[in-house]
Length: 76
Image (cartoon, rainbow, N blue to C red; front, side, top):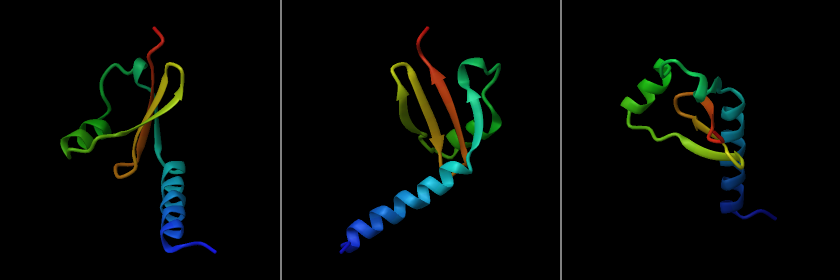
């Protein structure tokens, strides 16, 4: 039997997963000539993107509220 806190946590995870699947993929930030407008607007709102480690030198940044994600490769 699930407790209310377990149910709420699973529901939040499910909702975040749904949102994550719908995010606009901005590719690798390493290749940007200029910061995309969606990222600039997000920063102007005071949002701090969530950082997710994808590998030794690879991180994904995403904002579920603004609806985007991008990768940063710091290997060199």
